[in-house]
Length: 363
Image 1: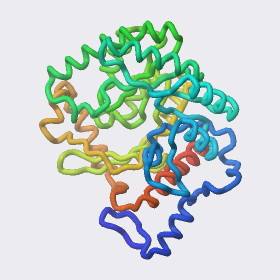
Image 2: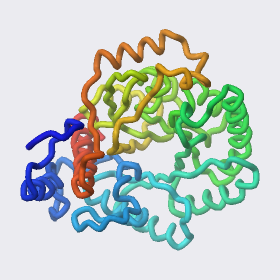
Image 3: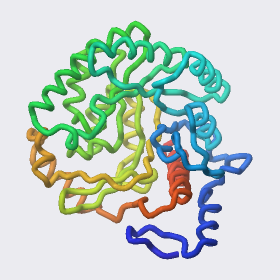
């Protein structure tokens, strides 16, 4: 094996690449196996659709890693690899499809969570309610959502713009809450590199509803200068759902790089986070979000980053940078991988995480 310019191991010949793909597609277990090892019996950890970002509606034709065209195919595959359920977008679902996936989920004894877009204006509320009704038809009880979508430090460029976004978010959540209450479905807003913990708590406490809570992403708030333990302590009492992930970091001139890595290979105290969530919500779903991608740049040493984060104490920046400099390491890159290698890497990352979760997190 040799290393590419990013430090990833690559096969030295066409034949060895074929061997890599054949074996690594199941470095843990091959998808062609008729049965899974006993280790995956009674696995509770589910999978977020973004973990399969390379296969979701993919156009690449692969016999070993076929694309998932809809949630039904994703659910079937996740059952095959031993996951407990899935979290997936519901936009575009029909009543017929909702009945189909509800029956499929029940037959497979899996759970199903949805993901829905937040209405940005009053005119979007009727469509929001239609999706809520369809989600209920499918047997979904929790819907994950995000307020902004893109990362705050990339999408918002002034404090005035952020305050306007915050005001509109509070307004629309207040208008969405009666719909959630009417249909008895919980909405779980993610800490999606948009809200710091205190801001997200201000948002949900403003509506003070049993139907509005949080999707706790284990690693996102690092990008906003929050230690994972701090984020967990603040948000866990209000958590309806989760994005389970492990993170690794590397310093750079603009700040640092942040990367998802398979569970157990990063810096997060996963057991502590899981146990804290269970303490407040014993019935919570844990959903793996292992995104196979290049590291993300967190440009916290550039002026533009701080445009909407001027109130963050300097000691929090210092804590994060010390943490990064202490634990920095080479991070995985994917841009040199051929498509089949990338699909194999994605599958291995997910299977590695399921194995770790079952062995060490009791999920």
